[in-house]
Amino acid sequence: MDKLPLTSKDILAEKIERIREEFPEVFSEGKIDFERLKMALGDFVDNGRERYRLTWAGKSEAIRNIQTPSVGTLLPVPEESVNFETSENLIIEGDNLEVLKLLQKSYHGKIKMIYIDPPYNTGNEFIYPDNFREGLDDYLRYSGQVDGDGIKLSTNTETDGRFHSKWLNMMYPRLFLARNLLREDGVIFVSIDDNEIHNLRILMNELFGEENFIATFVWKRRTGSNDSKNFVSSDHEYLVAYARTEFTKLNGILKDFANYSNPDNDPRGPWAVDNLTCNKTADERPNLFYPITDPATGITYQCNPNRVWAYEKERMLRLIDEGKVIFPKNGQGTPYYKRHKSELRSERKPVSTWIEGSSRSQNDVAAEQFDDDASILQAPLNSHGTKELRAIFDSQVFNYPKSSRLIRTLIEQATSDNDIVLDFFAGSGTTAHAVLDLNHEDGGNRKFILIQLPEPTGIEEFPTIADVAKERVRRVIRGTEQLEALGGDFKVFRLSDSNFKVWNGTGEGNVENLARQLKLFADNIRPGRESLDLLYEILLKSGLPLSATIEQIDISGQRTFSIANGALLICLGDSVNEQYIQGVLGMYPRGFVCLDASFNGNDNLKTNTKLLMESHGIEFHTV
Image 1 (cartoon, rainbow, N blue to C red):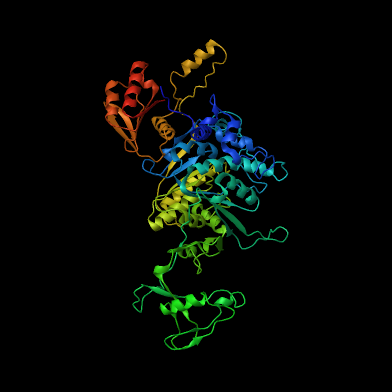
Image 2: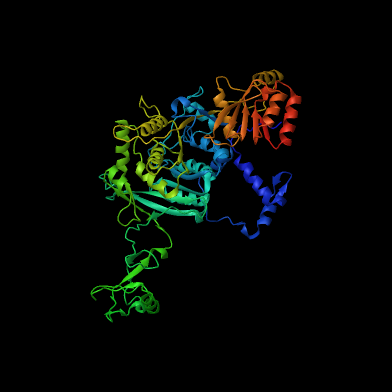
C-alpha cells in the first residue's frame, strides 16, 4: 500500500533520479560508479586539486542539511489569522530552514520574487541557532513545544575562528532551497552590507549561476554618521539581485510620452524633439565633425568641436532628406532630431544600479518614486523604516527595519498583478506591508509568504519577532491613525512536529518494547491534534499550496474534504466502505488520501481500493 510520505521533498533522491535519467549507464547495483560518470562527462571533469571554488569549514555539513528531509508540519492557527478560510497570504512562524524544506513540494517553481534581509554578520548580533544540530527536534525545544533544555541563541563574534564560515553555513542551505522555489522567470534580492558582500556574491554565483547575476544595487541608506570608522562614514548598503534563468528581466521604468505629439500631422505619428549631438569631441570622432545645411533656407550650421553630431555624414544627409532633422526657424540655435514614438525599441528604459536615499517624508516619496532622470530609483533613508514602524506601534518594537517603500520599489520591478513574493527573514513584516501597499494602489492581487523565527523580543505584549510581524500586518490591513487601511488578509501557520507518529522501525532490542511500540502506533495520530491540523499536513505533503481552496462535501454520508476544486479528496473519517469508494471514483479526482485506520483492518477492501484507483488513474495514498 502506498503511504503518503510524511517527510519533506527528498532533494538528494530527486538529484540522483535526474542523473539516472541522463546517465543510466553510470549506475551499478543502485549506486553511482564515479569512474563511469567521469568517463561519461569526458572533458568536463576537472581532476586537478587546485581549482576556483568557494569552500569553508562546515560546507559539507551545510550540504547534508539540505539533503536531510524535514519530518515536521505546519499547524494552522486560525485564531491569529485574518480571514483564514479565504486568504492566499501566509505568515509562517518557525525556523526558515525547516519551513523551506516543507514548502519544496507545494511551492516548487511558483515564487516570482524573493526578498530577504538576512543577518549582516556584524560581529555582535544574533545570527541563527547554529546549534540546531538535530533540526526539528532542537527547534521544538527552543520554541517551547516540547520539554527540554532551552537553546542558547548564539552571536558570531569577530574573534571566533570561523566567523565567516558560520555565516556561510547558515546561508548556503537556505539559498539553495530558495532557488528551487523560484519560477523560471523569478528574481531574488538579498540585502547585505560590506561585511559579507564578497562572500555572498561568490555563494550566489555557485548556487544560481554566474550567468544569472542581474546587478548589485547600491542604496544610499543614510546621510552620514558620527560613529564613522577611520573617518569614513559607510552610508550605503547593497541589494544583490539574481535571476532563476538568464532570460529574466526586471520591469524597468515606463518612459514619459507626455512630450510626444504630432502638430504637423506627420504620417509617421507622434514625435518629440531629441538631441542630434553626442558626447564626443572632434579629436575623438573626426568623422562626425562636419557642417550641415538646411535645404529650405540654405543656412549652414557648423558642428560644435566639443560635442559632435550623433551620425556620420552620409546618414545625416539621409535623415535630412527624410525630414528627421528640425532646423531652427530663424537660423539661430542648434538643429534637433525628430524622434518618432514608433521608432522606440521599448516603452521602458532600464533602471540604474544606484538607489537614491531620500530624506523626504514617506508621502513625498510615495508621490514621486523616481527622480527627474526617471532611471534612478528613489527610496527613503533607513531611518524612515524605523519611523514607519514606530508610527504603527507607538513604540520601538523592532530595531532597524527596512522601509516598506524600498521593498515596494523592488516588487514593482520584479512582479506583476498575481505573483507571489516570499521573505524568509521576515523580521517585522515589512515585505507584507509593501505588497499590500502596492496592491492597494494599483489594484493588483500579489500574494506574500513570510517566514520568521519566533526570536524573543523581551516585550510582554509581543513576545517574539514573529508576533511583531503578525500584529504589524493586522494593523496595516485595518489601518491606524497614521496609516490608511490597506486591506488584505493572511493565514498563520506554526512549525511543529508531524501530526502523525512516524515509525522509525526500532524495537529497542526486545520483544516487549517492540510490542509496546506497535500498541502505541495502533492509533498513529498524535494526541491533541485536530482535523484541520491533519488536513493541512496532508495537503502540504501532497504537493498542494496552503492557499488551496477547501470545501466540505458529502459522499455516501461521509464528510470528505475537496481540495482545489476536487483535484484532491481527503477522508479523515473513522470508516470507509465499498459504497463510499464508489462515490469517490464518481468524483474523478486526481488524488485520494484517507487514514489507514479508516479501513478498520479490512485489508481486502484496502487492496481493492488501490486497484480501483489505479484503474481510474487516481493517485491513492493512506496515512
